[in-house]
Image (cartoon, rainbow, N blue to C red; front, top):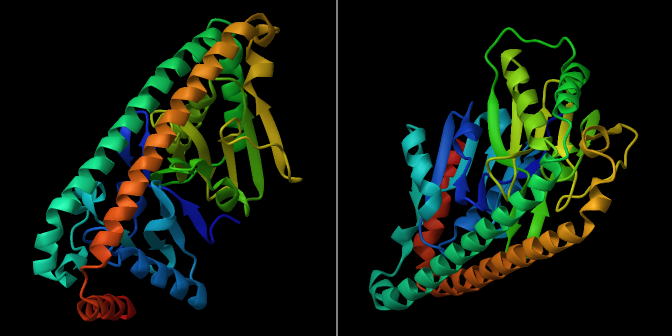
Length: 360
């Protein structure tokens, strides 16, 4: 059944820049704790500590990974007790502080040695600016890659049978949704199942879909209508009052890569590169847009052009990933700098305060 431990992202390093999808994931949350403070002030350790308690207590937890440092968490959500703890630093804080009233703030900056912090501010500012510049360069590369991707899509769009694509969409809606309806407003949560990270593309598809009764793997080339099909399914689900989890493309946040229906115990996801999956379980089926909707021989006819486009696309993505890596090196150095300026006794009291509030 759907549920249990999940891993995903609510922020993304995309061709549109740094994209936030936090708000909808707070639907149903009654207690929100926001950890504010500079890097290196113990927020990650607090989240890791909460994660350990979740495991020990048997709570179903949703771990929100950081796209720029996926080994750490941007937050943890505990649906069973309607509680969330989120990192409210820098870019993250913009939407959180305006969308959720009554949040409890823990400011780890109060644990700094203020004199030492003042002395280190020039170095810290230089590292932060360097990281920000690297991120901006990464986004420029991803934006260039998207323009190349548009060339890729155009080849297949020119060879698409759109009537067949519309027919396939209708068939898929009937196949997946059947006569399922709910007499309520659909709850829609927007997320990413993957991210462009400093080490390259990463996804948590197995974590999100492993316990589902049914998985549909969506195949097709760029421009063959995979995202359009998913959007039609999303609209149909909303009209029927079905709850859905929408997983946006970590490269192009305007596109969809997966829909998961918790109430129906099934999902449909784009299983092409960079998240290339093949049927591996008895409950896996394939829906192939290319085989159904594209003029036969298109791959062969445009092989030389496609090879050039693929090479340019990969080069732009790789350069973007390299800039993300540069940004992480700067942020790691900044984290090390700040962590040496913390008064450990003051930080311990903040952790105890958070733990007390969580216990209550």
